[in-house]
Image 1 (cartoon, helix red, strand yellow):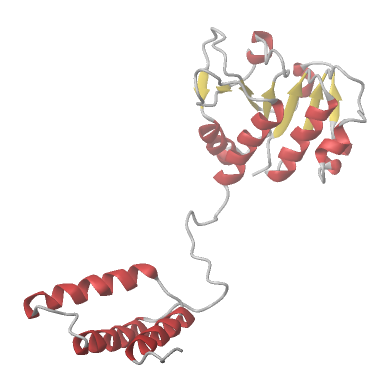
Image 2 (tube, rainbow, N blue to C red):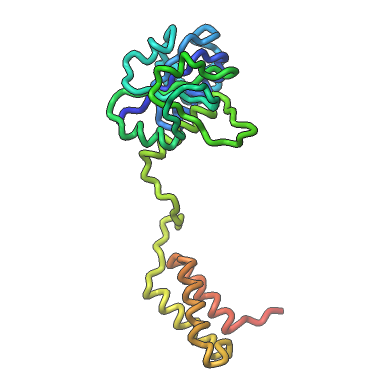
Length: 240
């Protein structure tokens, strides 16, 4: 799906625009639109704050008002944490991201001025309001934070990164057969050393050890190291 446009309404400082562009680059957003920026555009303070997102700043378009900036869009979300007294759908950034990912038309997200946020006249044409569930005592975000948060949820809604993965540095995981071989050796030595005692508890103790090493998910190399540990404990070298 096409990425939504990021529309900064009456942004006050060039450095904040640059930081917002950087957040856009982080999250795969590229269409930056500025509505009546307070300072002249282009702005010399925006580029240093943008880092490698200069391409986004160079392509940014300036519009006189929200109507002009959203004229080509068919769905618009507006961000605010204040209760504006409007009858509107209110969604979290995660919900908005899911809807944007599923939407096949041209869409955009409005972000208000740093000091005051969006006004009712800016919010009125929007199809939904995006509000971030934050600490009620301090829910306000700066401009770049808001863009990054919404952009992150949009990116994650289309990202296939597993939520949890074991980094093995390309080392193969130990096979079940290798694990069984190690456990047999370990149990043999524990029997010799009298650890698996008394006899009626032996089976349960072995099961606990199998569960422990199975939960560790060792690589083949790590399992070889454990074999070495068992061997060293079995036949310790005399030290001076």
